[in-house]
Image (cartoon, rainbow, N blue to C red; front, side, top):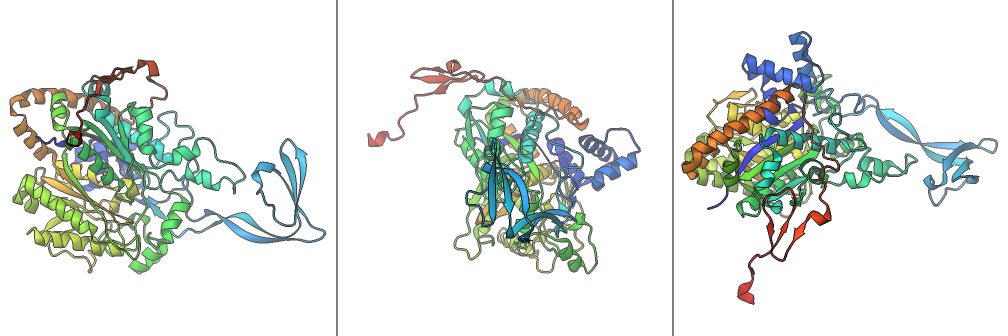
Length: 617
């Protein structure tokens, strides 16, 4: 009997707000919510933004609307009208003119330029005298062509809820995102650990670009130019494995399996594939899958901009034939567009095998029966698309048909597109969907692209898509591409329905969603996500003899989760940061020739596996 990986919790934060309990999804379809749900959504996000509950309701809603989703880059990040820059200038010092300054000797280059005279002042300090003509970097600023980004809600500081000193923003977001998922689980983590072996828990998470701000790679690479040196924390914290490592060390306290797979913009699905592979193989019973990306820096944005990949203010104005386009409208998947908008996000899922989920009374938010990954083959440009995504998407369609049947695939499924908002992607991705739809006799296939709201969060983009898909399948409203005026003429859509407004299909209209991702280098992935309702019906058949008992246990789980939801909607995120808490001493690990026992986990790790190569002995 093959284990089914089921989603028992999800959490995180992106430009639309908190992920748990569908808050970020509800922000994307705010105009389509019933009045009570709209007020609840606005109040919860307002608390996250530090706006409080007092004040006039319309003013608070306006602050929430203007302070979320894609918008102009905020000045606390950098002022895009006066972005920091260094200008290389020639400075001439004649016979009677000298430039003098003092510096630490270790901060100077080993080979000094000509016309530099250095005098030792003691204690490692020198005086530098420059004469002749020199080229110097002079601090300056310039108007930055890119004005928009998918930033976390205005006023929300991910590091404010715990002792986050010296931690890059991406890791602060990782701690917040994983804490949100763990708190929303509705089960005490110690209870989960008591039912499994330590190595039956797996952590699968990464970032694509690493930590790029001044507390990570940014500080490492700029330190010598800035007259300083890297700290002992900057380089290790910069690594793209840290969204997994930090959660193991400071949130979960896990000693189990860990992986940090990078597959460019498909990284989240790469990690999800590894987790579902291990659960279905029986190697893991619990898996935490996630990622965190904080790429909104001048240097990172300029790198993508120089590839002509990003929407610029000038490009959008030219596209629309006007002098100015609101930055909120710069991301337009499948419409006339001029590049993508960069975003930041942290997303984490908690998965269990179906047997453990039923045993513990975990809530079921969906299931992931498969994720498919294929490369593009020979390429001219490493960033261009290729045929690999035809394979991933067709295999995913075949799997959904096998599990749910023809009717669910053709009439009750949704495509959550990569939808990056570039002219090339809108053509190539839509062609894949349209051709697969034709092959499987699917008509009017609904397509959603949440990068219209959130921007492109790189490694975490598929996580954004998954939490939005769970919300869409539960509530029945598919977010439309409300930033565009019309679908572009070169988009393939004979068999597709790409709505420009929210599409209300009904609360039980969807049985499953395809999560699609395309990444530089030929990193393609498509995952199959079954709806909460269909996942539950499958489990009810498999566990019919104990289903009523499970439902009783689940109600207690939901009650505990609701307690966290109420706190979170008041801005109390209960961030988990176990710095040095519950450390396991070497002598506490009990070892025999039969098993290893680790404190805090209910089952020992056996050391008596049979010989897998006994036919060769």
